[in-house]
Length: 296
Image 1 (cartoon, rainbow, N blue to C red):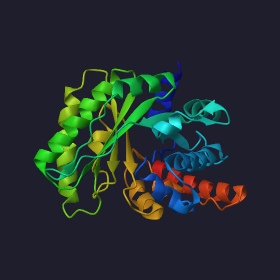
Image 2 (cartoon, rainbow, N blue to C red):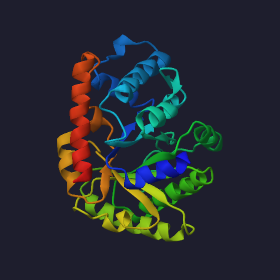
Image 3 (cartoon, rainbow, N blue to C red):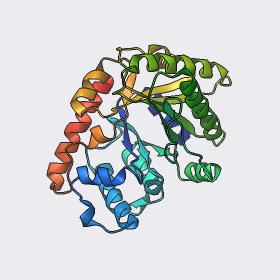
Image 4 (cartoon, rainbow, N blue to C red):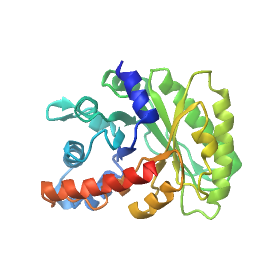
């Protein structure tokens, strides 16, 4: 029952997907932007306590609800932790009506053929089993396109769809994230190659099966319209990719049918030093602006 309701919310819900999935490598930077310097904690365990406190504060804020936030992507340790004694995924759905997703990739391989594939994911089946039991709706896996290289882009799409098949076999909805680096000179050419490969791969999916796509904001407005309209794509969401929130919102608003899935752009301006009232106001302003761009 919840799965069908979550699917409906992702398909037709009005709002965006919050990316709260910074992992080990990006956590210190996320904390520093939040006003928590590395001198304020010692060791990995304390670091993860700090980032969970930040995420809990965001999720518990009155500004964070299913009215404007359709879903949220979690890091594995966030899924395994509680908010006010309630498992995080359960808290999101039951208390906020926000659909929970899980980041499953383990980082990136060194660049080859202009792309960075995902590192091997040993134990993925066990993780997917745990995620399904925890009430997670879907997953997200990220790889990176750094050049308009046909061989590399074909490899990246093949790997993404291979992992997606594994995710689907556990009854979960995969979000494929082949991120195109926004600063590369041949970004538009890379996007064209990427879309062609994705469209070919979608045609190979079994009838009735769907995936989601998380893509960099395109160089040309509505470039990904064929993916947005494709019957085997549940939803296309966009990452901010290093753009400021203002810039990302402007570009997003030009792309019909694509909603945001921002991470750094969502938490921009939030601080551990803010009072709860200040924090809620800043988060509310961020959510409102991303929501407006997503529904434009």
